Amino acid sequence: MNNDPRLELISSASLFYQQGWMVGTAGNLSARLNDGSFWITASGKSKGNLQENDFVRMNLEGEVLESPNPQNCPSAETSIHQAIYSLFSKANACYHVHSVEANLMTRYIEGDNLPLPPIEMVKGLGIWQENPLVTMPVFKNYLNVPQIAQEIIERFQNKLPDIPALLILEHGVTVWADSPEKAKNQIEIAEYLFRYILASHH
Ligand SMILES: CSCCC(=O)C(=O)COP(=O)(O)O
Ligand SMILES: [Zn+2]
Image (cartoon, rainbow, N blue to C red):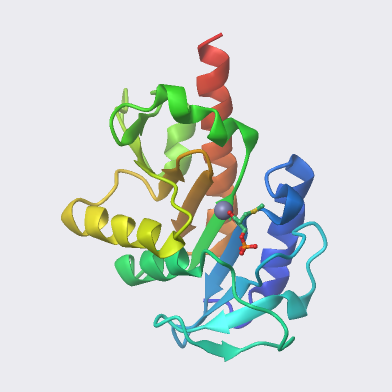
């Protein structure tokens, strides 16, 4: 694991911002360190031009361990990152963005899942099967973010997801991976799949 992944998080946030997936301070990125703590984007920051001080280092219990700018608060969605890191020991990065396409998935949801198209790109989410029939787990969006985190924990403790990604309805996608680079790629794959689903229904 990277000793200080902040520069890579800054680079990915800038890329996602340019794609329109992190506009208006939307989204949050985190990466876990060798000691189990994780750097996460501070709350309310514009993601297009983050600086190294725009991060807060947390532990899995949600305590602030380091905040280069003491005026910063950790992401309002830190509890979701905590949930992912506590559920998946190999997760070293957790990325969350708000694309328009993700928010348009609502009509394609079946129950609490989003069926994914059986196309080559699902390999980017780790599904190496002929004619893959996989779904993305979907969660309700609550103002009380810890409730979303709790529902993620309860659901995944009972049944692990097919893929390292989940969709929060009318909100955005969250992915996790064993490296920040893989998490970046998984965001791109998830957003490609959303665009494909929209285009295939026109
Ligand atoms: C306009 S973004 C609303 C909050 C949100 O959903 C998000 O992803 C960013 O919250 P943060 O506290 O991480 O800035
Ligand atoms: Zn969000």
